[in-house]
Image (cartoon, rainbow, N blue to C red; front, side):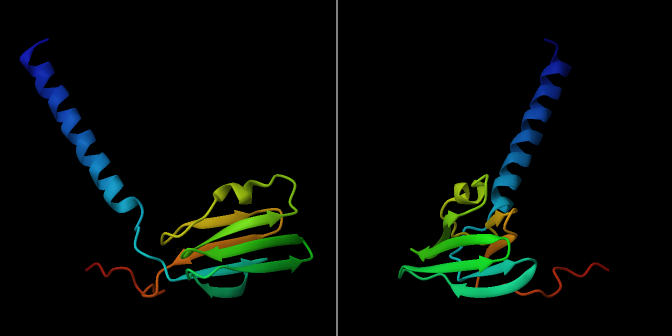
Length: 125
């Protein structure tokens, strides 16, 4: 290996390390989430506080049946009558911006923090 090859390899490793670090730092905000928004058929159905106390939410629509459980400051899909059962595989979610989706029943659940706002992200001049 020549000196130039080593320099190029070192630059590539530094760039990869920087990219990996920035991707991990910005990928998920693991702050404690406060609420979960539930949407059915694209319309807002409910907003639930994610508390430690356990309670269940049943959703019945023309598309099907889903049962959710709120516990331990998170939410999970316990039961669904959809054919693929992929929504149950999302497991217990609790971090901001995590989601559960049941496509056949058109259910969408998104976790967000108490200070989330739908305002402007940034202003560039």
